Image (cartoon, helix red, strand yellow):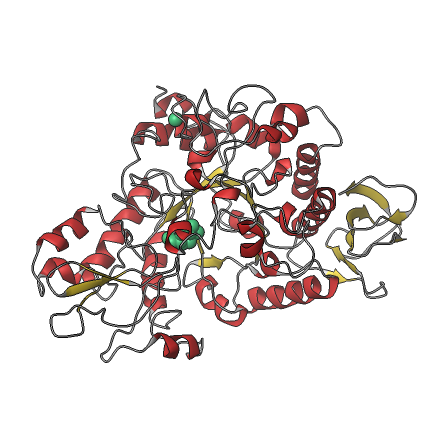
Length: 557
Ligand code: NOJ
Ligand code: CA
């Protein structure tokens, strides 16, 4: 094992002076168990990731966000955390974590880790203590326990349903029930409890002290809850307005927690960053992203949008304005570990119900793979041209599609079982990466992969794309290198005299991004081509294509 000191203090790490690095960063999400498996046990691990830092450097990302790597029974892909200050022994050790952190830093890449504060796992020492303790005990105050209704507490405290299906309450056998907004293995913490607050400050400090540059905050909008009796009904929850009025979501008090975290983050030099996973309407997002709070929040609007020029333009406009007002930068996300990959979303007819499509094993309707990839590359190049941070999800740089036909007995997502098999869930975007054209797991590991790697993933293997100028991987590398060179300022100016199917703008420095969402070519603005998402044929922007151009002649910034 390589000791931390081996990398030395003279390593060309990320600049300590650059306190604003996160504002326009390209952040690459690694889902550790599916990235690269160094010891061949079928589960991706930290040493696997360390071995691929060269790949990440060549790709040109600024930071890596690691999804949970903590000890976990994997009831929800690691978002059920047993111990927040340790590494799952199947994934590695703390020393290997330090080695990964140092190797990334030595290549100028920052590291963001995932923090899951809304719930622990049911194996967490606190929850085990709560189960072993009687109703009314101190141990139960750290979670949300309530007496059941009915004569003997045999009915749940309310009719709330969990995000993964089924009831949101689980009985513990003594008349009390505990709340779990997600799986039963994910009991919700009580954030009104001071010890809970202190514990997470200790955890954040633990990772920040180890050199972690930032944090991604899971379910950031649900920590504060109003559990005043009588509890609201599910119908009342469904009807509750966003904006502080919902008993379980997006309550104003949640920001007291993040203000306290910010004070801790700002004690570091440079200050640690944070990005909120907050599924809230756009106008509420800035609260999470404010400089006094987490600083940045995911904007999932493009991820949820159809392939439509007007929709993209209005989302961009709105989010840039919101970010500006709250003194932060916007974020752009097209894929992550929770959604159908964007190459596949764009391959399906508009309005396709993705759950229904997955339940047909991806057969009905048939995706138009080529069109999906073409649009995905165009959408990616468009988002990379925008001011703000771009969050990429592992495998999108290979053009990976969703694997919709995983066999039922391979599925791991709790959604599948809890929806009675109705919703297949999120495993199709979590399939291990194909690194090589050959081998039983296509270079992910040895003989095994915790989710089967489809044989036809060989078409997307890294080794087959690396030297191919036309591959999606080469395209991502070009785009990221150009973005790094060109990106300056945080503004854009719309080019307005464009056909309705076109989204085009200039950026400081006089470069233009133009996207043709339509199915016929459109005239290209004047300038020299920097990069394009599909092959060009003359001075036109082909259908479903983004082109970046450098304006010729004098320009104004
Ligand atoms: C959001 C995470 O991205 C998702 O994967 C997880 O299931 C839920 N939060 C619960 O932690
Ligand atoms: Ca392994």
